[in-house]
Length: 215
Image 1 (cartoon, rainbow, N blue to C red):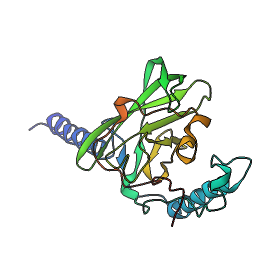
Image 2 (cartoon, rainbow, N blue to C red):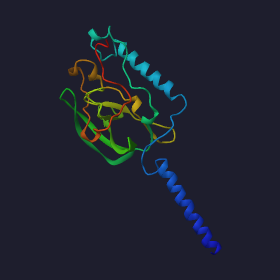
Image 3 (spheres, helix red, strand yellow):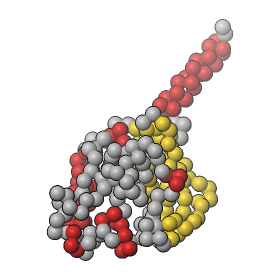
Image 4 (spheres, rainbow, N blue to C red):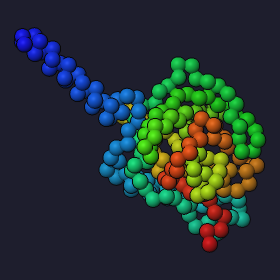
């Protein structure tokens, strides 16, 4: 084999290795489950405590006044880093505008802005990312096989975080219930999870269903 042929062969091997490494790290466009950053559990606990603080605050709480005195804190699944993913969002060149149905039967202007892909419970899942036009921030609503049992029937939400390197975080440990889950649904117009984001696998992470009487 000539020197040039050896160089070409080595180049091909190196390219294959790089491609395989990219696949392992989500280089195929998928988000990857990886080791959570240092301090992740502490930050998660602080965020959950801040949610309880909001629930107790008369000016911010979605709880009905009669329910606030008995409020003992929201219930969550145990923190599990396997439910935390990092990687790209695939954005649509032309976001799709539509009216999303809410729990109160109203409609709210919304855009489907992109999608993300990840592997969980041995299956590849594709979920859509939305943006409420009257709010302006991206969010991901979803249901799973716990919905209507351990968790809120209409679905839970996740706010998508962007990292400094341009990747995004999808952390089901930070899934939370919409405001309408805590009292009179007529007080809020919370988007119902679209069909595209209704999974059949269990997502045992994030906030559980709200119980008015913890006892």
